[in-house]
Length: 125
Image 1 (cartoon, rainbow, N blue to C red):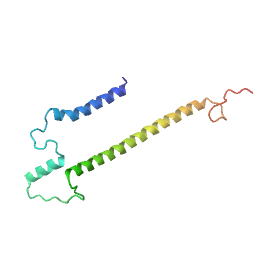
Image 2: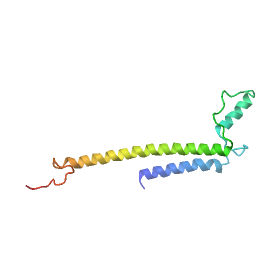
Image 3: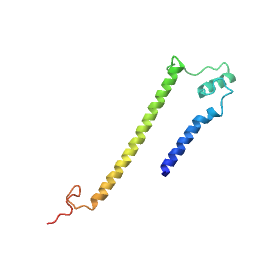
Image 4: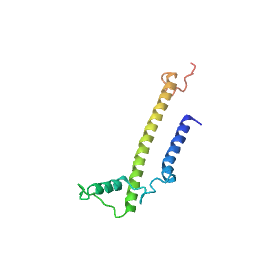
């Protein structure tokens, strides 16, 4: 197994542990909704501190239900993942293209001048 494969396997194991351990250890069992978002928790704390608090502004769009809100969040995450995957793929493709160009240039330096690809370099006159 190569070094990169070992690192990838270790990262995958860590991500799986981050997803499974909170559920396996029962973290959040003492709460009514154990895995609510930070926004809901912040709203609860603010209401406890100052019950008369009025938000500065309201959302531009309020989804009709929690399911729609979850779907929009998943769509946002998918678009972000697609943008990141495109960027990293583009960088890798450019790097590989540059490496191939260097290899071709290095292979072409030993070729006879006057031929584009080095074919016929061993001509006899």
